[in-house]
Length: 567
Image (cartoon, rainbow, N blue to C red; front, side, top):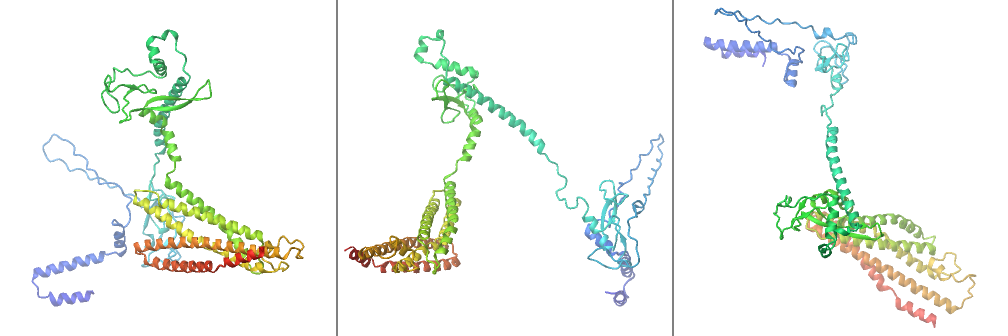
């Protein structure tokens, strides 16, 4: 609404009002005019951003203190307190240096790279007090505490107007954690006292236990004057007890009425007192509470190389102090059953991954139709393939062992099943290249019918005729026929064995994929079911093909030919 529209509205609608209402409208209009005259867009914008004044003030003095009135004896009115004298501070721009300021030329633009407005007029022209360059009013809405030499001084400096670049690149701007004080040294010193005390106590008890075991392993002979009828009946118990008391003095039985651990009262016969051999305290021997137990230690005798078993009764505090570190190291070294099984599975997988590249290279060299493989290379490929099959079998057994481990935790059961599924996927992915060796063997068998003098003879034909040194056919015809027929039978049996091994592998893969399909149906993952069903169809088709090849193998004809050749 413009001022002309407002005047027309007042003249049309408020001209015939009463005097009181006219005065109210007039006063309201005058107040709005005063506020409009005082409106400063820059100041209002800064107040919205900061919620405070436009800039921080350097006059940080608090409210003036009123001195107390002098005490007089008269009851008249006391004189008014004197007003505090206001100390006028000098202008901050007169304190800071201006030697580095950029001089205006009249055609200057804002030094901010994203602005580029011409300075002067509505845009304003302000020198950054820190870097001295010229900026517009909008890009100098920041403050820093600077010294007289225009350097950042956060403690004793004064507030000055700076640009955005100087404000955001000052020291400590990006430190969001504030001042940090490390208590690590204090913690180490405090912990060192406790640890040193514990080490000292452990060393003291270990020394006592070592002395005691050595003393009991090689006890000195008892003195003759101490021998009596009672000692001959009881044996060397009194002598052993006296030796044990030489290591640490025992606590008096009468001074302790109950066990310090379980607080059960001692009696004369039913609940007897016992002593810890390393600290000398009176304790009970109740197996239900475990306040003290007898520990069997194997100690080497000095006189002979044999070891002797020594029983030493110790309280549970001394046991924990002496053996806790060794028990902790033993617990760390002991692996649970599932961890050991998974470690074996990882080792088998690592061995398979190391052997697969070698098998792939041999397979590429064997598949060249123009250069038939030599017998040594074919034997090497068969050997590597057998090693891979054995490794895959061990890998499958290890995966099944992990799957069948007993557990009461559903999370552990899910983990074991996930490991098994991953192992099944690994087998399904890497066992397919193993079917190529039987095809190469079959091709070598077909080429075995070539003549021995033919230059392009196969591996099996070279094996069949390796006995002909001169190549002139000096061997009898019946011998040559029997050799050829026996080689054919051997090749047929080898092919059958390879086909049956391949059939076993494919049937296992089909079983694994069927289990995965059932699991995916249970979890309602129908997209996985479609792809897995296609894999099952491919495996079934290949199994049927192998079964057909096995059915077409003519063993009867090969054996009859072999018998005829022998005759």
